[in-house]
Length: 267
Image (cartoon, rainbow, N blue to C red; front, side, top):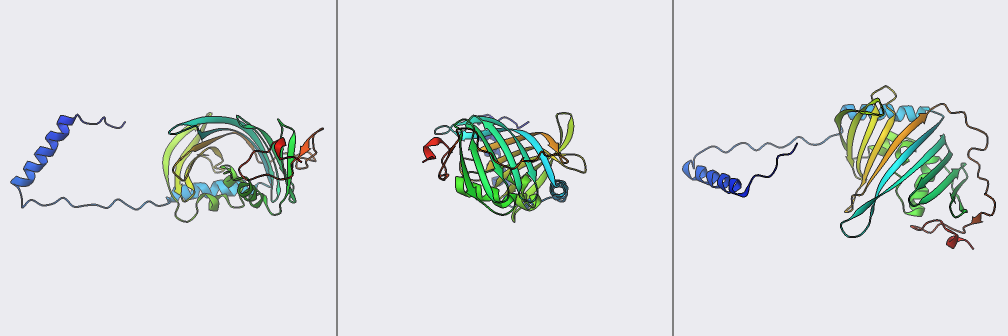
């Protein structure tokens, strides 16, 4: 627990004593100045992240459910919390389905290796964008098009370890704790994209149970993802990654950068 600030009189007295001591002993030796050790990516952090990456990339397909808490600006000096929940189905290298419901609305998306489809389920409007490549390439393209950041992207990347630890990243082990009766190891990472905290199962699989991400920049807003379930051997029904427009759904002509998908985008 941090100590409370000393009263003003104690600070002044301490300063006066230090000054008197310096005057009384001008020949006294100066205490050596020590340089704190440079921050590094600790070996145990690197090893745990590599185990996690191996687990995720070795699974041909997986499903997961999660909840989110995200800070959002709400005026000068104030932020608010927005909550949500979602589910992801991924099949490497280039199949993805996700559904998210939040305070900002409900959306579903499909990627089949050729097209990326987004559906606003509240307004029953969708948009289709041609995309090629793996899951990571598709999601990066959507981040750029929509002007958003997807904190879950590193877990869906071709190499989760590389995405979490770009050049200049430092990391340290913070300790062990428990999430829903599961023992986890808590790590902190600092890098060019922002500050990450990640809680991994204290097991060879090292599956993530919680992720916290603080964006780089002046606002330093935080997003927290809590993973309720992982299934690394799912039985996926046919058509999981195929989009079929709902009845009376409207198709948007484009997805403007930074704008929500609404019927105002339709012809």
